[in-house]
Amino acid sequence: MAKISSQDLGTLPITKLLIKQAIPAAIGILVMSLNILVDTIFVGQWIGSTAIAAINVVLPVSFFIAALGMAIGVGGSSIISRALGANEKSKALKTFGNQITLTLVLTITMVIFGLGFVDEIVPAFGGKGNILEPAKIYYIIVLYGVPFLALSMMGNTVIRAEGKPKFAMYAMMIPSVGNLALDYLFINLLDWGMAGAAWATTIAYVLCFAFIFWFFLSKNSELKLKRCHFGLNRSIVLEIGSLGFVTLARQAIVSVTYLLMNNILFDLGGESSVTAYAIVGRMLMFALFPVYGITQGFLPIAGFNYGAMKYNRVKDTIFIAIKYASIFATVVFVLLMVFPEAITKLFTNDSQVILETPPAMRWVFGVTPIIAVQLIGAAYFQAIGKAKQALLLTLLRQGFFFIPLIFIMPIFYGELGVWMAFPISDILATLVTAYFLNREIIKNLNPEIKRLKSTI
Image 1 (cartoon, rainbow, N blue to C red):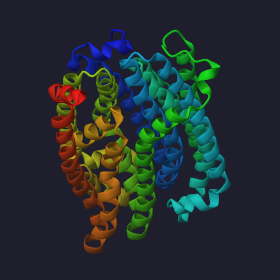
Image 2 (cartoon, rainbow, N blue to C red):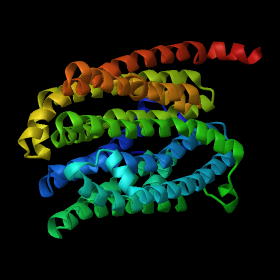
Image 3 (tube, rainbow, N blue to C red):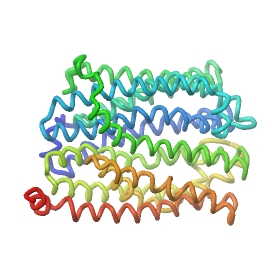
Image 4 (cartoon, rainbow, N blue to C red):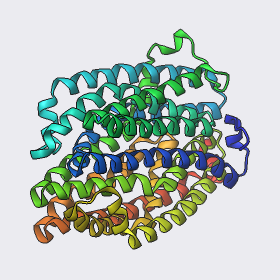
């Protein structure tokens, strides 16, 4: 795969460019998702199904803290992409330095808070009954590695903003492979149980950080920082915050959703229902890797060309990204409708979990072919720096539709109602996103209209 510079984002043909950006992103997401998937299989087979539920309890807490890094990364990378497109290298450097400072301060503060309230946080997120003790073991150890994960997630988005998707892919692959090897060593050979699973994950975060740290020190990166770049700049921090808040809000909603789902399903169906949700959640991360890869590849292309005022290229990028993402989403839909039982048996031998998970999986992935519109639509507004629209569209599915539905639907349909909430919220969110995206294309991605506005 040929090397890509940031300037290529504004010149290469869109389809070729999207492929060059999306394939490494998709491979990286695939490997990371496989890591999570196989990690869950190892834990389920070597420790037990309760351990799967315990990890599912901890994930929203650790991922929310790590999402601070992702939020700062995505917000800052939107600025960096547009700055590079407008040939404002100094602004790109200052933004990157501010991203590092913000990530360190915020994540370390959150980890200290998280470790101070272990006994309150773990039960609140569904760590009850037999799930409580293994969840606490996993939680404490993993939290030590979360700042490294946050810095890695932040740095990974900056690497993409530079137009270096291969290195971003490597950054996702290295810790994934390391985690699986350490899982085998710590859980299977050394018999460390939940502590082994936790230490494997934590060390994997450190490996990821080490690679990204090397990248920015090497000649591969265009962004060479000096001490002056780390001092916080108010306008840059506010712009990072406004755009990054979209990502943070998304992860906050994901964490709240995990909290509510774990508790609602525990009350309706007990530990087996929580485990079924954990398995379905892993498949959501794994199966849609090509769609997420296209979305990740789309972001720097849209941001760069919008900053360079190449609006026809932005418009073409939107349509091409939606087309390819929809094709892959349809393939995923077919596979999961046909093989849910076989997939479930990979994770556990628990007969009750095997009984509950396949129908849940079919409901959750019931309208997968249409989700490309909502993912690309929300990503577009974030890429071009329109934080309010991006925030609205990001929160639509889970915040405005899904969370109310998981309280309403069980009143009429019991546990089935929880699973039915997934496709209903997807349909509603896609319709609203399509409306806003279509309006944006008509009003603001027409070069003639943009030129007319600029003369008024």
